[in-house]
Length: 233
Ligand code: URA
Image (cartoon, rainbow, N blue to C red; front, side, top):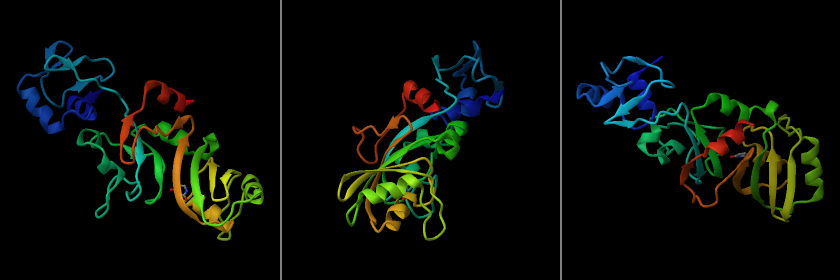
Protein backbone atom coordinates (compact mmCIF):
# COMPACT_ATOMS: atom_id res chain seq x y z
CA UNK A 1 0.00 0.00 0.00
CA UNK A 2 1.22 3.50 -0.85
CA UNK A 3 0.20 7.04 -0.01
CA UNK A 4 -2.29 8.49 -2.49
CA UNK A 5 -0.20 11.63 -3.11
CA UNK A 6 2.88 9.51 -3.77
CA UNK A 7 1.05 7.35 -6.31
CA UNK A 8 -0.38 10.35 -8.15
CA UNK A 9 2.86 12.33 -8.15
CA UNK A 10 4.65 9.25 -9.56
CA UNK A 11 2.59 9.67 -12.73
CA UNK A 12 4.22 13.08 -13.09
CA UNK A 13 0.84 14.71 -13.65
CA UNK A 14 0.42 16.41 -10.26
CA UNK A 15 2.79 17.28 -7.45
CA UNK A 16 2.09 16.11 -3.90
CA UNK A 17 1.06 19.64 -2.95
CA UNK A 18 -1.41 19.78 -5.84
CA UNK A 19 -2.87 16.41 -4.80
CA UNK A 20 -3.60 17.80 -1.35
CA UNK A 21 -5.56 20.65 -2.89
CA UNK A 22 -7.38 18.37 -5.34
CA UNK A 23 -8.43 16.10 -2.49
CA UNK A 24 -9.73 19.13 -0.59
CA UNK A 25 -11.73 20.11 -3.68
CA UNK A 26 -13.22 16.60 -3.86
CA UNK A 27 -11.85 16.00 -7.35
CA UNK A 28 -10.09 12.70 -6.61
CA UNK A 29 -12.01 9.45 -6.21
CA UNK A 30 -10.60 6.14 -5.00
CA UNK A 31 -12.70 3.06 -5.74
CA UNK A 32 -15.83 5.08 -6.18
CA UNK A 33 -15.49 7.28 -3.08
CA UNK A 34 -14.09 10.79 -2.74
CA UNK A 35 -10.55 10.54 -1.38
CA UNK A 36 -10.46 11.33 2.32
CA UNK A 37 -6.90 12.69 2.50
CA UNK A 38 -3.73 13.00 0.44
CA UNK A 39 -1.93 10.54 2.70
CA UNK A 40 -4.59 7.82 2.64
CA UNK A 41 -3.20 4.41 1.71
CA UNK A 42 -4.10 2.92 -1.68
CA UNK A 43 -3.00 -0.10 -3.64
CA UNK A 44 -1.69 1.46 -6.87
CA UNK A 45 -2.09 -1.80 -8.80
CA UNK A 46 -5.65 -2.52 -7.64
CA UNK A 47 -7.40 0.72 -6.70
CA UNK A 48 -9.26 2.74 -9.29
CA UNK A 49 -8.01 6.30 -8.87
CA UNK A 50 -9.85 9.01 -10.81
CA UNK A 51 -9.07 12.69 -11.17
CA UNK A 52 -12.07 14.62 -12.45
CA UNK A 53 -13.53 11.28 -13.50
CA UNK A 54 -10.50 10.20 -15.54
CA UNK A 55 -8.08 7.44 -14.53
CA UNK A 56 -4.71 8.83 -13.42
CA UNK A 57 -2.99 6.17 -15.56
CA UNK A 58 -0.57 4.91 -12.94
CA UNK A 59 2.37 2.91 -14.29
CA UNK A 60 4.85 1.58 -11.82
CA UNK A 61 7.90 2.51 -13.90
CA UNK A 62 8.78 4.94 -16.67
CA UNK A 63 11.16 4.19 -19.55
CA UNK A 64 12.53 6.91 -21.81
CA UNK A 65 14.80 6.75 -24.85
CA UNK A 66 16.84 9.93 -25.16
CA UNK A 67 19.06 10.91 -28.07
CA UNK A 68 21.71 12.45 -25.86
CA UNK A 69 23.35 15.46 -27.48
CA UNK A 70 26.99 16.39 -26.90
CA UNK A 71 27.51 18.96 -24.16
CA UNK A 72 25.19 17.63 -21.44
CA UNK A 73 26.08 15.49 -18.44
CA UNK A 74 24.70 11.98 -17.91
CA UNK A 75 23.65 12.88 -14.39
CA UNK A 76 20.46 13.59 -12.52
CA UNK A 77 21.52 17.02 -11.32
CA UNK A 78 24.52 19.30 -11.34
CA UNK A 79 24.99 22.72 -9.83
CA UNK A 80 26.65 24.27 -12.85
CA UNK A 81 26.14 22.16 -15.93
CA UNK A 82 23.12 21.03 -17.89
CA UNK A 83 22.15 17.39 -17.34
CA UNK A 84 20.11 14.91 -19.35
CA UNK A 85 17.25 15.34 -16.85
CA UNK A 86 17.09 19.02 -17.83
CA UNK A 87 16.09 17.88 -21.34
CA UNK A 88 12.86 16.33 -20.05
CA UNK A 89 9.63 18.16 -19.21
CA UNK A 90 8.91 18.80 -15.55
CA UNK A 91 6.28 16.07 -15.46
CA UNK A 92 8.95 13.47 -16.26
CA UNK A 93 11.61 15.10 -14.07
CA UNK A 94 9.47 14.32 -11.03
CA UNK A 95 9.51 10.56 -11.58
CA UNK A 96 12.89 9.72 -10.07
CA UNK A 97 14.48 8.71 -13.38
CA UNK A 98 18.20 7.97 -13.72
CA UNK A 99 20.33 7.32 -16.79
CA UNK A 100 21.12 3.67 -17.42
CA UNK A 101 24.91 3.99 -17.48
CA UNK A 102 26.77 7.12 -18.34
CA UNK A 103 27.83 8.58 -21.64
CA UNK A 104 30.66 11.12 -21.54
CA UNK A 105 29.73 14.77 -21.87
CA UNK A 106 30.92 14.84 -25.48
CA UNK A 107 29.37 11.46 -26.43
CA UNK A 108 26.04 11.38 -28.25
CA UNK A 109 23.42 8.76 -28.82
CA UNK A 110 21.19 6.29 -27.05
CA UNK A 111 20.60 6.86 -23.37
CA UNK A 112 17.82 5.06 -21.53
CA UNK A 113 16.34 6.79 -18.50
CA UNK A 114 14.23 4.82 -16.04
CA UNK A 115 13.25 4.37 -12.41
CA UNK A 116 13.23 0.57 -12.80
CA UNK A 117 16.32 -0.46 -10.84
CA UNK A 118 16.03 -4.12 -11.76
CA UNK A 119 16.15 -3.41 -15.50
CA UNK A 120 19.01 -0.96 -14.98
CA UNK A 121 21.01 -3.66 -13.23
CA UNK A 122 20.23 -6.21 -15.95
CA UNK A 123 21.42 -3.89 -18.70
CA UNK A 124 24.61 -2.77 -16.95
CA UNK A 125 25.93 -5.84 -15.17
CA UNK A 126 28.66 -7.49 -17.30
CA UNK A 127 27.32 -10.84 -16.04
CA UNK A 128 24.27 -10.41 -18.27
CA UNK A 129 26.35 -9.87 -21.43
CA UNK A 130 24.21 -7.09 -22.86
CA UNK A 131 25.85 -5.62 -25.98
CA UNK A 132 26.35 -1.86 -26.16
CA UNK A 133 27.24 -0.77 -29.69
CA UNK A 134 29.09 2.48 -30.42
CA UNK A 135 29.98 4.22 -33.64
CA UNK A 136 33.48 5.71 -33.33
CA UNK A 137 35.47 8.01 -35.58
CA UNK A 138 39.20 8.03 -34.89
CA UNK A 139 42.48 9.61 -35.82
CA UNK A 140 44.91 7.20 -37.44
CA UNK A 141 44.08 4.14 -39.52
CA UNK A 142 42.22 1.20 -38.07
CA UNK A 143 43.68 -2.20 -38.89
CA UNK A 144 42.84 -5.90 -38.57
CA UNK A 145 45.32 -6.20 -35.69
CA UNK A 146 43.13 -3.76 -33.71
CA UNK A 147 40.17 -6.12 -34.18
CA UNK A 148 42.23 -9.06 -32.89
CA UNK A 149 43.37 -7.07 -29.85
CA UNK A 150 39.77 -6.12 -29.02
CA UNK A 151 38.57 -9.71 -29.49
CA UNK A 152 41.20 -11.08 -27.15
CA UNK A 153 40.43 -8.72 -24.29
CA UNK A 154 42.90 -5.92 -23.70
CA UNK A 155 44.77 -4.92 -20.59
CA UNK A 156 45.52 -1.21 -20.85
CA UNK A 157 48.72 0.51 -19.78
CA UNK A 158 47.00 1.81 -16.66
CA UNK A 159 46.04 -1.75 -15.66
CA UNK A 160 42.40 -1.61 -16.82
CA UNK A 161 41.33 -5.10 -17.83
CA UNK A 162 38.77 -5.16 -20.61
CA UNK A 163 36.58 -8.11 -21.51
CA UNK A 164 36.73 -9.32 -25.12
CA UNK A 165 35.02 -6.71 -27.31
CA UNK A 166 33.98 -6.31 -30.93
CA UNK A 167 35.64 -3.96 -33.39
CA UNK A 168 34.13 -3.83 -36.86
CA UNK A 169 36.02 -1.53 -39.21
CA UNK A 170 33.71 0.49 -41.47
CA UNK A 171 36.42 2.64 -43.08
CA UNK A 172 40.03 3.46 -42.11
CA UNK A 173 38.76 6.05 -39.61
CA UNK A 174 35.39 4.61 -38.56
CA UNK A 175 34.32 1.55 -36.62
CA UNK A 176 31.55 -0.09 -34.64
CA UNK A 177 32.66 -1.04 -31.15
CA UNK A 178 30.66 -3.60 -29.15
CA UNK A 179 31.18 -3.81 -25.39
CA UNK A 180 29.42 -5.84 -22.72
CA UNK A 181 30.65 -3.64 -19.92
CA UNK A 182 30.94 0.09 -19.37
CA UNK A 183 34.06 1.20 -17.58
CA UNK A 184 34.98 4.86 -17.39
CA UNK A 185 35.83 6.24 -20.89
CA UNK A 186 36.19 2.64 -21.99
CA UNK A 187 35.83 2.96 -25.76
CA UNK A 188 38.09 6.00 -25.84
CA UNK A 189 40.71 4.32 -23.66
CA UNK A 190 40.73 1.08 -25.67
CA UNK A 191 41.11 2.88 -28.98
CA UNK A 192 43.67 5.32 -27.57
CA UNK A 193 45.65 2.30 -26.34
CA UNK A 194 45.79 1.16 -29.99
CA UNK A 195 47.09 4.60 -30.99
CA UNK A 196 43.74 5.63 -32.55
CA UNK A 197 42.26 8.39 -30.41
CA UNK A 198 38.52 8.87 -30.70
CA UNK A 199 37.34 12.15 -32.19
CA UNK A 200 33.60 11.36 -32.25
CA UNK A 201 31.56 8.79 -30.35
CA UNK A 202 27.89 7.86 -30.50
CA UNK A 203 26.04 4.98 -28.85
CA UNK A 204 23.75 3.23 -31.31
CA UNK A 205 22.20 0.46 -29.25
CA UNK A 206 21.90 -1.24 -25.91
CA UNK A 207 20.79 -4.87 -25.99
CA UNK A 208 17.80 -5.12 -28.31
CA UNK A 209 17.11 -1.39 -28.26
CA UNK A 210 18.41 0.69 -31.17
CA UNK A 211 18.49 4.47 -31.13
CA UNK A 212 15.41 5.71 -32.96
CA UNK A 213 17.01 7.76 -35.73
CA UNK A 214 13.88 9.90 -36.06
CA UNK A 215 14.91 11.46 -32.74
CA UNK A 216 17.20 14.43 -33.20
CA UNK A 217 19.89 15.07 -30.58
CA UNK A 218 18.12 16.33 -27.45
CA UNK A 219 14.81 14.63 -28.30
CA UNK A 220 13.26 11.70 -26.45
CA UNK A 221 10.31 9.34 -26.51
CA UNK A 222 8.73 6.81 -24.19
CA UNK A 223 9.64 3.16 -24.87
CA UNK A 224 6.91 0.91 -26.22
CA UNK A 225 5.71 -2.09 -24.23
CA UNK A 226 7.39 -4.41 -26.75
CA UNK A 227 10.71 -2.59 -26.40
CA UNK A 228 10.55 -2.86 -22.62
CA UNK A 229 9.69 -6.56 -22.70
CA UNK A 230 12.46 -7.24 -25.16
CA UNK A 231 15.03 -5.41 -22.98
CA UNK A 232 13.95 -7.51 -20.01
CA UNK A 233 14.95 -10.57 -22.07
N1 URA B 1 33.04 4.76 -23.81
C1 URA B 1 33.55 6.00 -23.77
O1 URA B 1 34.76 6.18 -23.86
N2 URA B 1 32.72 7.03 -23.61
C2 URA B 1 31.38 6.89 -23.51
O2 URA B 1 30.66 7.88 -23.39
C3 URA B 1 30.85 5.59 -23.57
C4 URA B 1 31.71 4.54 -23.72
